Image 1 (cartoon, rainbow over the protein chains, first blue to last red):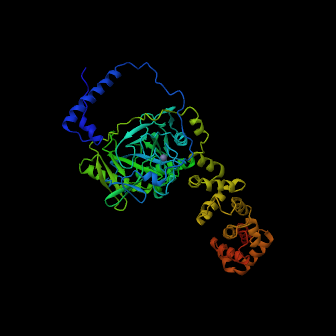
Image 2 (image 1 turned 120 degrees about the vertical axis):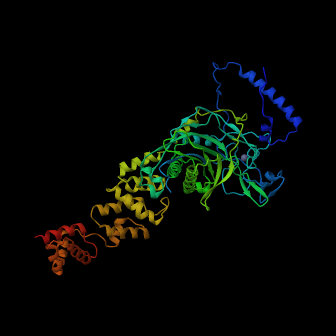
Image 3 (image 1 turned 135 degrees about the vertical axis):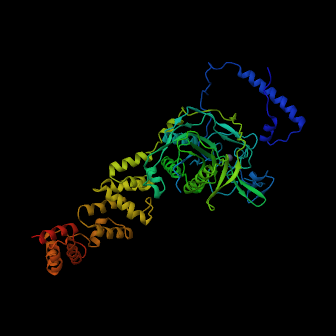
Length: 93
Length: 486
Ligand SMILES: [Zn+2]
């Protein structure tokens, strides 16, 4: 079975990664292999198997406020801050 | 302004609505706007490693309630997905949203004719009574607010993670006026359910627009353009009016419409290219492994159902039927539930309920009252209307009573006494005034008898003056006519 091809440079650009040609070749092969496994899985006939719905409601939260971090604590790991805002490189629209 | 007859626009809206919850979507931080920056944040809404989201049940109930109010199909099981993208206002690098299994699907927004722009409410477009189909309603988390400085941007994460409901319409809208009414009509429903304040100018309701044009009769859609930066319903209307005209002009010149996002500049009154959509965004949605599917059929849906309010269209129909108000008055009353409750109380016992509506919607409303706190009891308007209906005072006197009511609130009956305003309806007293009027105005009498029926007005004026405005004008008219034709 031939492994599906994946456009690794496309995926890298979506993930904001810069890859060397060597890395590109290596990851292409690895990710194709992973996709190959998925193809194997999708060959299993599941049409007649009913979808599993969760038996019970997962934990939900009541709409009651709980304490937040202090402003100092929240900003303590920010590389740059001003006026209690976290500063980032200028966002261009 | 109007679309040339050969072309039609195809418009779809994506409306984001901030929900009225106490806390954020997946953490217990306060959901409140306008506080000190970075004061409502925690590991969950800052996206710190190891934190886990827990859904806010109230946000789910409010979304289900919206679905119920808009006639959607509600999913028994709904799922949360991750929408992956990189942007500084999104700390986790993904937004928790819903993709394959949203809480609500289908449904519609009926367009209220009186929520079209004022100057086109009389047109066929407004009166058509269209309902705009919805594709879906889903629940997601809002992003942080950004401020742009000269060389850097600052982020306030207070808004990050607050519940945001997205309502997506089908491409059913055809005109800027319909889009305007859609937003207004949708807002009325959201207000009725206490789901959101839904004020676009405060960012509580935000709207992206997709618009294309095509020759009338063509089935295929033209290339669609997305419009952003729309901060008011009238802004949406202006932006669409501009953009539709721009696209038609381009099409008539044979130019292709670029598939792009354009920014509306309200000051310039024009749209400008923001980015082209050569490559469709690939958000790589996948089910959020931190969140189990939500079962709406285990109490959530029932809880939402118990909160179903009287919908705007139902309320308006009832007001017209039970109180005899006009369709326009019903729309005005329906848009302000507190004023509406005030009116219903005022009209409950009144003989002429439509007159009560006139007093409240014309005279009272022009004083810009707060019906929730006004010292003027609603029953006073019922009484005022009754005093006119039973002939105790005439309409000119009623205006005086109203002025006094505003200045020194008291029962209109008392005010009538206090001001000595009661109308004279006593036939013999009125007869005396009429005799005096006839004796003092021989010329008018002669004119009247010669066929100039308007001449009777001079006699009526005489009687009103003599009686200091207290004569019952209808009776005076009758008595004078009887005496003159004798
Ligand atoms: Zn939080």
